[in-house]
Length: 471
Image 1 (cartoon, rainbow, N blue to C red):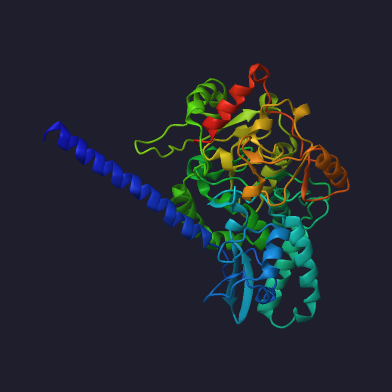
Image 2 (spheres, helix red, strand yellow):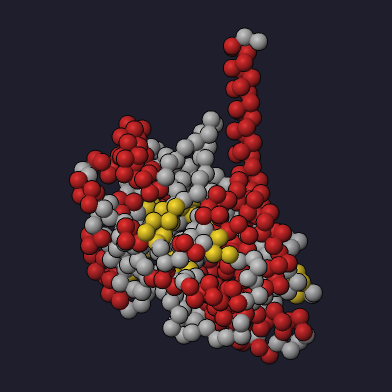
């Protein structure tokens, strides 16, 4: 065979492989969007039949379209609302003559960036505490139906516990777009028959992105890398506390394994949807290789141009200096609770990471992952390159995933002008949940600033941002 023939065959093989990987992503997207882990009355549920009043449910056997009320609900509570008028990740499941509202993974782990729905992207606008508060009120009004039958009562009691925990004033999230990892910790107290302490840290974080998740798992689950993901079970974190059932986890473990290996492993990062200034990219790449990749690692592609995922590494807090509240809350106490509990055979720890620091995540799709840092405290990439004292103290989280809120130059959220800023600061000081306020517990925008950033020119910053758009 001559050289031209060989090259042609290789080219066809590469094209087929490239097509297969994109096809795998498309298939994974659809499966992920339609997955929940409701099983035998257990899961992240609300009291049966409340969901009948909503049009935007993903229902067994089809559903009616949502209307004005559903669009308002989606915006008020931060659900991603799709073009076909559905709440992404919210299902109406038929069970023993009832319809049970069930939250799936994508309620928190798929959201919008610049107006585009991205599978596996953390939902920027979800407000789990506000959801818990309103659902608790509605469910308590339905207490008169609690004794209708054993099945209703079983789901009602678990659903009310779910709402109570995420609405707890002491541990719930203080700002939309953040979720409290503290609620995961509550399960392990209840598993041992103990009341969780009222002064437990909130541990607020943004919902993480999930592409490259398969390679991250052994390195550690969550932002501090302490939970070893080789057993898969840590994937069940939020669902576990919602269901309040170790048996539920064991029952759905095969589905979790399938999700980790055959679905999430095939997700690709989203491509930047706007124009990229190629003349800046080469200069920006050199800056990234010199300064960013030392912590975040190399970012290589396969022969078809798709990302080669690799495990991130934990960076010591003394180096990165970001808000320590989340890291300090998942500690040796949690390890002891787990080891004494009913799931000790499934949940392992990376002991070397306890109290160490945070992951320096891979930067694939980083343009879409604003606001930045584990606690979402920096609105866009441009602000990362400023001294913490010069970064915005407040910024708006409403409609954070919509195109109108996307700053193409700074890459991330738009920020207030001077007049808006003063008004927003006053509202934030009064507790407005739609405004991010860096003076709240766990919200500090400190850290991730290094002395060499002071030497960057304006052009250097814009060049680096332009390269980061390509990842």
